[in-house]
Image (cartoon, rainbow, N blue to C red):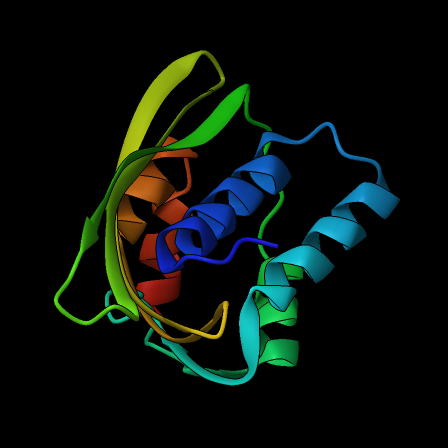
Length: 152
């Protein structure tokens, strides 16, 4: 189990990447969802302020596990986080400035993200995840789907 705030934040992005990159059996996926959820406190405050359909706070470890396991299934050739951690004056808080980079249907993409995360006792207690959701929809050929959802 990662212990430093930087290691915990990296572990989340790397776990998401393992799920997105595919190739996992159903059992391996379920184990990864459990591992991802275990990186968060039982009670937490995770938000996605730039979510195009509105931000629904995730307040519990169970909600986080559901969030990870309920995501869309995409076929990707590659999906990985590339970036750097910024330490802050508060030893519990780190900023992970990175991009999810990869390839889908032979097209390369880079989706910028910034996670501002508070880690206490080795688990995330608070996070603001700023993700380019439009860029993600573009990378996966889902702009029409997003536009339809936005206009509904």
